Amino acid sequence: MDAAWEPPEDDAVVGVVAEEADRRSAVADSLEASFEDRGRTVVRGSAATLSKADASVLVAVGERALSALARESPDVPILPVGENVGLESVAVESVADALGVILSDTARVRPRPIFEVTLEGERYRGLFDVTLVTAEPAKISEYSVRSGDEPVGSFRSDGVVAATAAGTHGYASAVDAPELSPALEAVAVAPIAPFATHTRQWVIPPGFELRVERDEGPVALVVDDRSVRSVPVGSPVGLAFEDELRTLVLPADC
Image: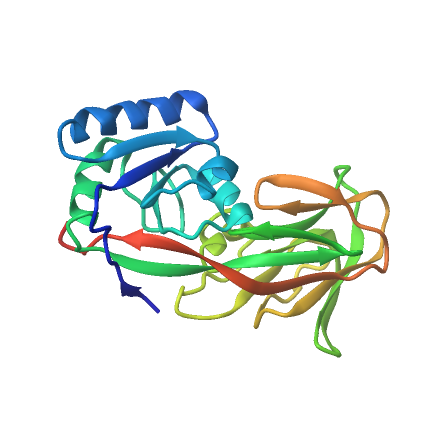
């Protein structure tokens, strides 16, 4: 549920995060020019650095920056910038105007669930999707989905993707996963290139497991845009919502 945004009473500090240094510099330079003599400070850096900085709001340029911030879980809200499918974003050229609106107390804060992924004692975080996929092309493995103690389904395919509401508008849509409303606390799960043509897809609550039941080659665990490790046969990959990323949403008439 959206919440009211309370802008800082004192001079605002705006942090700019982008995985590409040139995009970060371009946005920061534009903001510095716009904020000149307005009592606002612009800082630039990585997600890890700025998540711990004393910023009032963070600007995330692109999906990779949003994913990096989700891994860090900053305490301040984030303005998504650029082409972020599935999230309300502002165009790069409109960042200064958007922040002017936000800092004048007319935005809302919209929480976005963050996946916490567990495998053999290791933990990973993702904002958009989690994928188990064969590392070699044309290698079909068998996967299963379990919710609690109950089996949900099993299938042979190239892989399986689980997506948040934001993630269902990205890669998951390419494998026909159902698109979810952000109002739902649910996950869309779909096979990737299933061997059977009538394999089901699911919308299930968070707190479930994916498993590789049988493999014909190495299976990789991919969280958002990062391949993080291999998945052993029979080891449960747990997916839950344990945290939120707070994003700023402008009024519809802006």
